[in-house]
Length: 361
Image 1 (cartoon, rainbow, N blue to C red):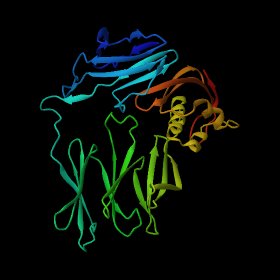
Image 2: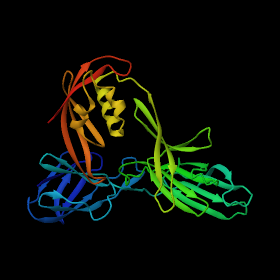
Image 3: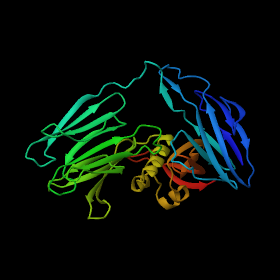
Image 4: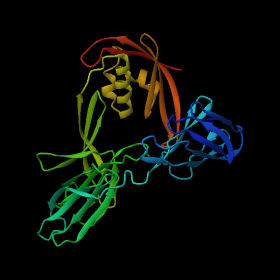
């Protein structure tokens, strides 16, 4: 097995493998090998060569153990934190990394929370209005529910100073619920999903769900939960109805989908970005609009399969080499798949080009 420690082109790295100094990686990868048979624990230690050029933060060295058995990467013993991940590329494995950072002395310190918004509702059903207070600091958002008597009913801190709160009877039990929407911008969350937290005042239950971005109130006093997905070219809003039976997990039933085109793809590069980004979002109907006549999505997407990121390079007029990256273990280990796309100029209202063919390489 061949491993390459890839440069990050900003901080560089002094590399140790199992306690042995391998060298310095700045502009070119460093290579080491392991036998194809046997079980190994590979301790990778990476120390930055320089500080942040801005002087606002210092990168911190990282050390992670990669477990290998008979030429296969095993799942880590602990949950991935996003600072190091491995990419399978044909017959070699690339080690990519991002340093965590700490503030330089006196720089970027967390500010005191500032009250941004207050909403009211009778959460404890005493006939008086309680207050939902939202605060923002430089790095975090704070939510506090205070009763009319001053008692703290709920409070928490989130890694998003742009979080939003909504008060609505989502559970349809006649009592107000608190919904908190935030996005974790920390690199420790490799998927970067939006999150929704539901606090039910009746019993203090607290549930967290991924992917939901807001609510929609209907004319029937019903509250739907939204998943809003977008690229520069298209926006997709999925509306779900929340339900839960006693002793069962919450269920979200898709009620309707709304889509809107935002921007035309005028160049070959924009077409590829638009098409592949929609496939990453799972918007197959939108992706189909970029296909040439008589070309079906299974003919193209069947070659691609599911993936979370992509890269493309031109081979010639209307011919592109595309790499897509598919997680094997989210946030830790992915594989690269390569294919070729052929394009035809077929102008319409959403794009100048269409995809005519996909070939697996």
